[in-house]
Length: 126
Image 1: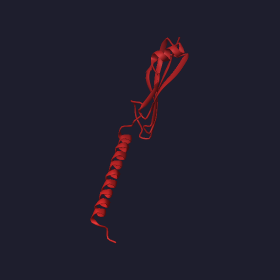
Image 2: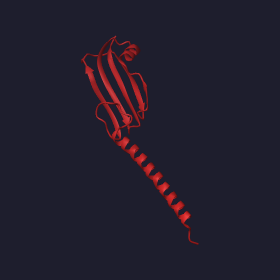
Image 3: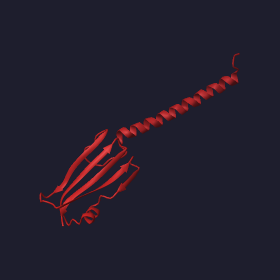
Image 4: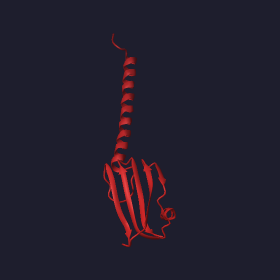
């Protein structure tokens, strides 16, 4: 009925291995959690940021002159791993035929560090 010494050692070794696996998984999950709370994987990179949700619009430049055209382009980021889009002034100006820029705004949006985008909006005249 009683287990012999070899079976006891084998059982003890299995328990230690399971504990080691559990500790490793716990440490890994803890590091991921810390990363989400303090690093924010996907971030627009500037301006005020909310912990759960960010939606801001920042006026970067403005002359106060009236404008006839307005165009917006965005860049996106998923988990801070994949980024795509073109929000350069050259791209915006070529897409809208704006020659003189009278206003520039940046709009940001982010959710939990999972998704973020930055949109550049320019206004101007031909």
